[in-house]
Image (cartoon, rainbow, N blue to C red; front, side):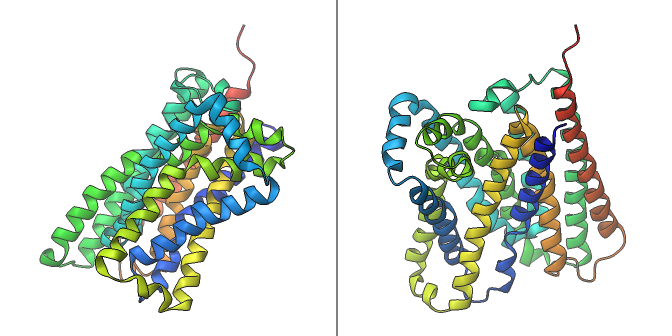
Length: 355
C-alpha cells in the first residue's frame, strides 16, 4: 500500500476513536439532559461548524450547491435520505447511552450497522473515487467481508461482556426492565440505520467536491466540510428538531443558560462530532476506491474501542472482574484483528489482476 493509503487507514482509526469517545462530556453533566446537550452539540457540529468553514473558503457556496442541484440533484437527495436514517440512529444512540451504557450500545450499533455500511458501496457503487470499488465477490471484497465476520465476533463478545457486567452489578429487575428493554429495542433500530452517515458521504462527495474544486476551494474543505454541510441536512434536522421538541414539551429551554460549564461541554461534543466525521471522510478518500467499505469498517471497529474506553473511564466497569471483564479485553483484541484484516483487503485490491 502507498503512504497515502496508510495515512487513510490512520485517519479512519483516529476518526473511530474520536467518535467513540466523543460522548465523554455527558459523564460530567448534572443539569443538562439529552435534549440540552444534544441540541447544542448538533447545532454546532452539524450546522454551524461546517457552514462557517465552507462559507469562509467559498463565499458563493450557495451558488455552487445550486449548480450541483441542477446537474446532479439525485446525489443530494440520496445523500440526505441516508443522513436522515443516520439522524434517527444518532437520536436513539444518545438515549441508549443513558439506558444501557456506552459499552453495550456501541456493540449493538456496530454489529448491525457495519455489515450494511461495508457491503452497500461494493454492490451499489458510490460517487467520485468510490465508483471504482471492487465487487463484493472479488478477492478484495471477500477479504473485507472476512474482516466483518471477525468484527461481528468482537461485537458478540462486547454484548455478552456488557450483559455480564450488568448481572455482576445486580441491576434490580424492576428498575431496569422497562429502561433496559426499551434501550435494547432502540439500539437495534439505531444499529440498522447507523451506517447512514458514511453512506451519505459516499454517494454525494463526488459531484460536490468537483464543483467546489472548480471554484478554487482548498481540497480539504471541498472534499469534507463542503460535503457535510449539505449532505447531512436531513440528519441535522432530526438531531436538532427532536431535542427542541423535548425542551418545548418539558418547558426546559431555560436550562441551556443555567450552566456555562455544561454549555461549553456540549459545544465541545459538537466540535468532536464534526472533527470525527471530517477525519472519516478524508481517511476514506485517502484509502482509495475501496475506502468507502474498508474505511467505514475500520472506523467502526475503532469506534467500538472508543466506546469501551469511555465506559471504563466512566466507571461502568467499577467492581466488575472475572469473565465479563476478560470478554471485554478479548473483544478489543478481536476488533483490532478485524481492522487489520480489512486493511489487508485494501492491499489485495491494489494487486494487479490475474491474467
